[in-house]
Image (tube, rainbow, N blue to C red; front, side, top):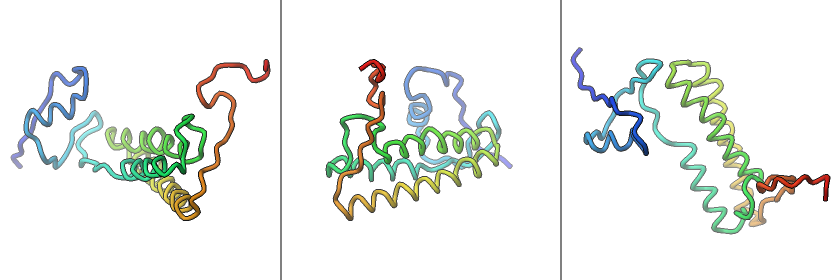
Length: 148
C-alpha cells in the first residue's frame, strides 16, 4: 500500500524539534508515528492538559497555594500524572510495549486523573483551600531540620 512519509535526520536540534519539524513541513495530521519501537497511532493530548487547566483554576481561586511546590496533595498528584504514569504510557507506546503503555500507563493514568477530578470538585464545592503539608525540604530548602 503506498503512503506518504516525512523524515527528520536533524532530529536532535536544540528546542522543540518535533513541533518545529511538523510546522516547517506543514504537517497538520498524523495517521501513524514511527518510533524506536515501531509504528503506532498518535496519542492525542488529553488527561494532563485537562488536569492542568483544573489545577490552574484552583490557583486562581486561591484554593491551591503557589508558595511552595509539592506541598499540597494535588500538586503531588499532578507530578505523578505527568512523570510517573504519563511517562510509562508515552514510553510504552513509543517502544510498543503494551503492558507499559496500557496497564502501567494509561490505566493508572486514568485512575489518577479520576482522583484529581474528585479532589478538584471537592475543593470547588467547599471553597476551602487545600491542606498544605509542612514537609521538611519540600520547598527546596536543604537545611537539616534536625540542626534547628
